[in-house]
Length: 237
Image 1 (cartoon, helix red, strand yellow):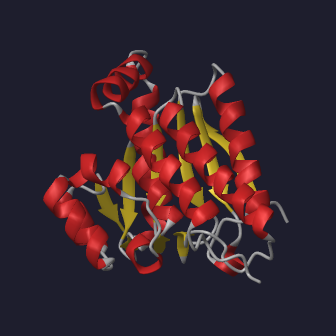
Image 2 (image 1 turned 90 degrees about the vertical axis):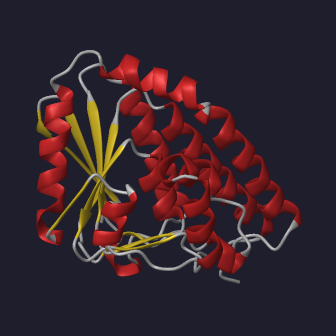
């Protein structure tokens, strides 16, 4: 079974679905490797104008890292490198991105969602920045620009769950619909964005003005130090 499903549902719109429903789309090393390869292909294809991240199951967009993956110390370090490469690649992506936020959006799932330019929530959303529970140094780089410093601290420090209505009121998502309608709404939004030639340049301007590359690089350095010298993400052993 393919861990990623890719299609072109509308002109200029690439749809990428995570397909590991048995683990709520938790990300292991092979899935991260495939995601990175897909992003490289998307970035190199001039026919793609918008990328939509979604899921084959509305139970979860992504529940974070697959902490049950059996890895030795070197494998755990390499998995963290893949996460850092993914976060950097998403920040640098040429095309705008839309995330379908349904069900569990936790850990690395929140990082992918926050790294996207736009987000559509399903009414079953359970979103949380879980880093404080494991001591993982991740979250502030992407969360602060979305909701502001004071609210970002509260969400990160408490690791509490946010539903669709609150996510909409906080500006974490751009719209909220029924869970089974979220992908369709995201594709409609993506099609509207794909109509406009000037979007890539505007995205580049937002990136430079917000200095997101430096923010992500700073957080990635701390993530690698956490894996090499701290407790690190669990490795299933």
